[in-house]
Length: 70
Image (cartoon, rainbow, N blue to C red; front, side):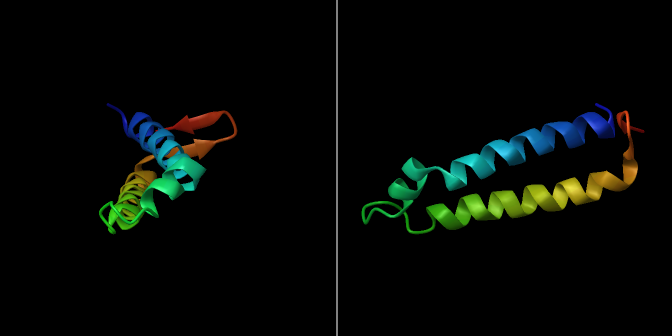
């Protein structure tokens, strides 16, 4: 898989996970008393580390007006 494809896939995952983190049903679930109190933290950690991985890939991807290229 090319670095540009990896970055696009990571970005897509990041957007989807961010949408979950902001979803009212997710927020209601993580704020319940009968769930692991770390649920919200775990998702935040995933977003953080995925963002870090994206930052590591970006130097290998050259962006242009036409899109992402190597």
